[in-house]
Image 1 (cartoon, one colour):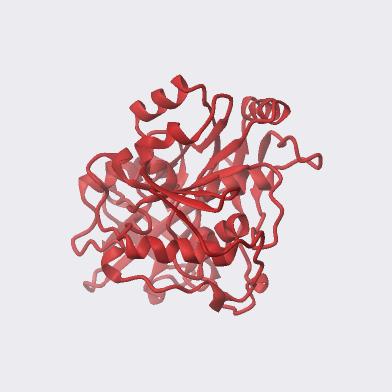
Image 2 (cartoon, rainbow, N blue to C red):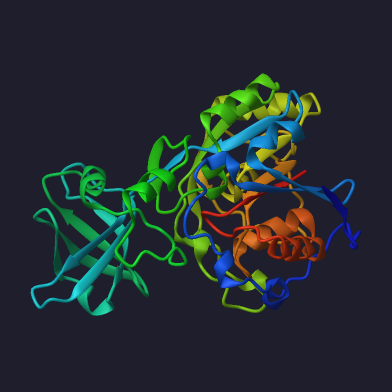
Length: 363
C-alpha cells in the first residue's frame, strides 16, 4: 500500500545529535534473521512522489528499471573475535581488526580491540586457544592495541578455525554465536576477507533474487570496503560535525568504475547496496561527478545532512540505531524530518531493526 507523507521538505540539515533520536521498542531489535533472506520486509521511499510503499526484498526487481546499476560490497566478515582464559581464570577477549604492513621476515602485527584493559599492558603475552599467542606492543587508543602474532598458522587461517562471528552487542548470544550466525552473518557476495561486521543491506540477497534482477535488465557490480569499528563508533558530541569518522579501506575495480560511467552516461541510476558501498563510492568520486576513481584507498568521506551525493542515486539499507553515523548518512539522502516519520511508521508496523532486521529502498 502507499501512504503519502505529511512532510514535503527537500532537505533538512539539522546537525545536532539529539535531532536524530527516536523511540524503538527493544522487541523490534531483530535477534534472528528471517528464514529466507529475501523474505525480509522492504519499505520503499520514493523521494520524487514523497510516498512510501510496503513490500518485501524479493519484490526489488519491481522497483528498479532496465539499465540501472546495483553496486554491492563483496567484503567477507572474518570470525574476528577470540576469547581465552588466563592462568588465574580470568576471561580475555580480542577482536582482530586489521593487519599492519610488516616486513616479510617479521612476525605479523595487527590492530586489535581487547578487554579487560589490565591484560593488555605493553610487553604482555596472551596465550590463545590452539597454542598460539599475541604479544602486546603498544596501546593505540582506549581499548585498542597493536599486537604481534606468534603462531604457526597465519592469522586468517587461525581465525577461521578458532574465531567467532563478531556479532554486534545488540544481538544477544549468552553462549556465543551459533553455527547459523556464521552462515547468515555473511552476504552471498562475500569474497574478500577483512570486515569485522557484515555490510548488512547485502544480507537480504539470494541467488534467485540476483537472477531476477539480471533478467529485469539490472546490472550488478561490486566494490570492496572492509567494515571496521568506525562504522559503529557512537557519536558522543552534540554537534555531529565534530565527530571523527574513522577511515575504512576500500577498493573500486576498474570494471565497476567503467560500469558506473556507462550508467551515468545513459541517464540510468546507480543504486548502492548499503551505507558501506555508499561510503566507498562517494569517497572515490571524481571531480566531474560522473565517474569514480578505480583503485584502493581509505574511504574517509563522513556523510552528513547537507551533503550533495556525487555518485549514488538510490540506496538499499537497513534500519539503523538512533543518533548513529549510519542514520546521519541516510538522513543526508532523505531529509531528517521525512526519514524520522518513516522510522516512526516502521515502528508502528512492527518492522524489524538493525543487522538482522528489515530493509529500506530509497529511490
